[in-house]
Image (cartoon, rainbow over the protein chains, first blue to last red):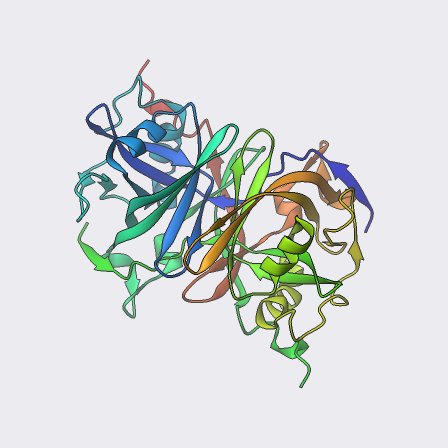
Length: 187
Length: 187
């Protein structure tokens, strides 16, 4: 296939999450497109957040944050939380808020899955900081649990691509991991 | 909505990438489900990789690695690269390999988008290491470029969910970012 060099600022398609913190004493939620699990045991997750946002101050203030997984039905509210700053806008009433064992990481009742995290490390990079948190509690709606586990199609997550700035739903099942490639293993 | 506490080891749906390194002097590729952009300018990307794998040694050896975005058509080969170790299996011939300006980060010609990265920082965590790389070069197939930019539906990325271990294609367009939430902004 013929290749061409493209701009280095390439974005891979990512799930959108809402990161919850306490900002100026109230619950605040920011839409974040850069989030991934980073450690297996204990379970840790990391979010890359622009240093200019209010959320880094919120994380620093309590040493905790939450990661909330919105369903596609929450697209408008999720997008709104990505457009307005917690410095100038009170976002504490956009969602119904609840707290878990950490007490300081606000979570969103409307989100099918929410995680509360204890900050482990903040990796300062030139324009962003990577906040690594240990998952201290995980909560799911009863309605998305199948066979005792969260069911991804029921969660109906929202994916984001940039720079086209489009949201997508999860598509069709393509195959099974640790299985689809078995035929290529030499016997 | 009624909530229940679930296992803390929750995985958010993620794109699958193939991380390329030099292992034992040959090109090696590993399927990685934990990968995200982490810095805006300069563009950086990070991958969380289990410390027991061969790939961390490969990254340490050259200070470089590649991130290759497979299309769903490459599911079998991608899955295979996640099932067998570069320590015991020569994966250098699974794909057609090419190199960019870094010379030491093998990239996959069959992947619609490939990134070559210079290691910036390795964040050691209990079971995994987060390898943060600056994107030194980005390459795309001519066939996935629309209006001068990579087109995500043309790339047709592969998403992975765990612990159900299923691959998914990108679904339908749900809405536009920095737009869908405008109606919630107070005038």
